Length: 488
Image 1 (tube, rainbow, N blue to C red):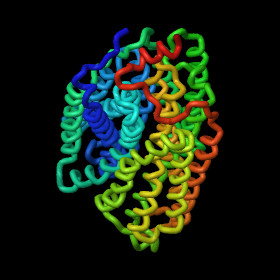
Image 2: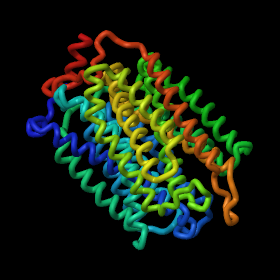
Image 3: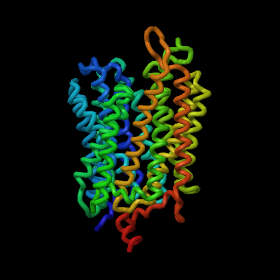
Image 4: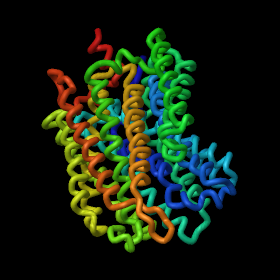
């Protein structure tokens, strides 16, 4: 099967890399856009607070499902095509929310925005097909960093738009970005014919969606419904049971949605387990630090910042992930992807330790957040490289999608755990129950433990003899042809 990219594209791989990173950033940005107006959503959508909470949850659930599904579709039908579809979903989802003020269509639009998150793992897997070896590591690292960069930029941007403007404007803005992404993907990203033979496992996709959504709903809503609630544990248990049945079904398929035998390889399995721990560590600081910044100064430890100011204090930490992309690529060249993952997780843990002792001023939390974000930038770049080094070429996008899913599971768990910890130890201030200083400190400790657990897990990943961390087929040798050479 021919897979030679268009010559005009292959001569300018950096243009395509920038286009893909812009797409990843735009998709990630939508994840945090509604957080600044979260408290106003019940009034804006004419619904209850419990129902309004689904505006955020719907996006997270759809993103979790979309990553492995988009990866498998990309392997079967071509990565560039699936990227265009993901960008189109982001356009449609943004427009749906921008044109309504009712709960149901808003939830539908937010779900479509979540499905667009498949853009990131598919983009990562595509980069190795058209970038020259010296650029591959930096390209993958930059694309991985967009998840954090977009989220960090989304907070102050949305707060600024919502402050004195119609809240719909933020979704018109995201629709405009998404349209640019779609056009850039069509025009600038190489049209590589990298489709692999096989069929799409529709039953497997539905089973995974039901299992994941049911389990993650139980986890994400546990704090609202109560951790002793039958509904909470019923959802979590039912979701796990569905996933067990789904796993048995997948093992009997010739063309499964997810090849569980591949994911069970020690290098891939342990990388994915580490992804849960590191994803947990990343999300913990994204939840805890803004709350500490916005807490009233009258508590004695709150920093009294506005929503916009808190977002601006957090924005540099997101940019640090992008700054450390070339650092991560250099570490992978010198030490290998496994060691780089361990370093990233260790730096993330160090950021929490710093925060434990520096939480008395916004600039102190800025330093701690930047340290933690640097670790995320380093570690997030190493994980897809480890996956691509060990996954079969025909399953590259699917394998990266599963890794992104595991990171998403980690972030969902972190959101639930942090919310529970911050509401379980409170102090009364003017009739408001606010988290105590000890609750914030406990969150920092848990975040550090999660990161260092990630270090320990990463240390057990078996090495292979040739692990440069950034090895990639030359841009003139497509992956499918390389696979044919390697496997005879």
